Image 1 (spheres, rainbow, N blue to C red):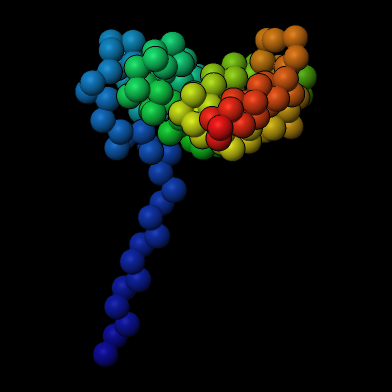
Image 2: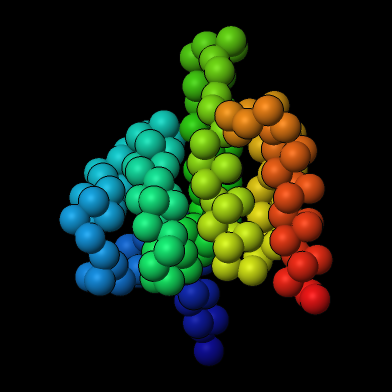
Amino acid sequence: EPEPEPEPEPKASTDVLADIDISWGNASLQKAFERWPVATSAVAQHEALLAIVAECYKQRKNAPYLQLGAQLAPQYQKVFAASRELQLSRDPKAEFKGVGFMQLSTLCADSGEFAKAISLCQAAIGYGLQDGTVSGFEGRIQRIEKARDKAKG
């Protein structure tokens, strides 16, 4: 009897966002999501995802935005790394901003996902990014740890 055909490996989809229902979202979120499927380069994908994260950050007092933003952290890290690699291959002196990591760490901390928030800050430090504050991502980690300890009671 012939061997059954092996199941094809599910290809690593860059379209994890395709399964997310954002029908509840505002026009800015809808527009940001529309940029994702047409983003063909790593840099364009990073810009599209950054726009989604930025809108979630802006609307973080609304639970669905907060949850969506925190949910995107792993994908953002992958997309940022790919975008950074591509840009450095074109320009070894390319500089990068830490706004995505800053916004995501806030979204995760506000969601009570303190370990994920701290991990994002550590990743940003590893990339040599700044968050625009005097104390940088190091200070952000300290503030997240304080919030975590306070939440524990």
